[in-house]
Length: 369
Image (cartoon, rainbow, N blue to C red; front, side, top):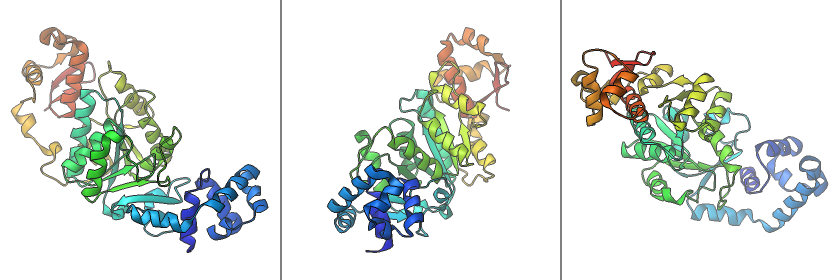
């Protein structure tokens, strides 16, 4: 067995995270020496109870059988000591000492291009779904790798949009890579693998998700990304945990402002108040990352929507017609359109994202110049 295989063995041991594993390496010098260490020496570092559990685990666990299972399930692994280990992830505090994966590991390389995590609410609004698809499409058309957590809602939309546009995407799981959670996203899970993309996790084969595995998963999403984009989320959304990790890792954080009447807008506004970059188009992200727009098909380069003043729905066309002659205040638009204020707020926000109109910051809206 190689030293690398002993790292792999420790990753299957419950209760041994990056911090404890680092202490074991510092004390014993190698993972093999730590694996073979007597109970008293282990107890000094991981406690008497932990040492007892490790002894019990070591007696029953077969490294050879576990490696065989890995091969049977087409799963690979990278250790923190491997040169192929993703450099961005290596830079964070307490990176996973073993990263399991399925699919093409080369996508993890920073050399393969810029990477942006697109995360948000599980229970999305129509506005959130449209914004996520619109921004993700533009990022993919510009060659960005899309990273997310394969959850319902924004995660699923971002992965699916990347696949639909033949882009690169990485799913980070809060369970073993041989498990698809939630099961409703099995088509996306399979699509990621069939298209030559990648699924990763720090958790061992067969491990089911728990409440604590998702925050750990979120730190990996942020760690693999050069920037995090939150398109929609409540004030207590798990996507804010990913954004908080990104801020700690000195990565860029972007947030999409939504209708002020929607609870799903509170998360992004909370991030903006903390210093996240407000985003109304993919161009805002590209400029902040000092990235030149690479694709003429990208929606951020499409002038036709602005020039022709044509909306995608009859509601949008009505608003464009009303703003044709002069800017109008939100209250005046409510009066003239007879739309519910909440509906109008969502429409205006979406039209601003699409580059049709602009908010003059005093509640007044006008056509984009």
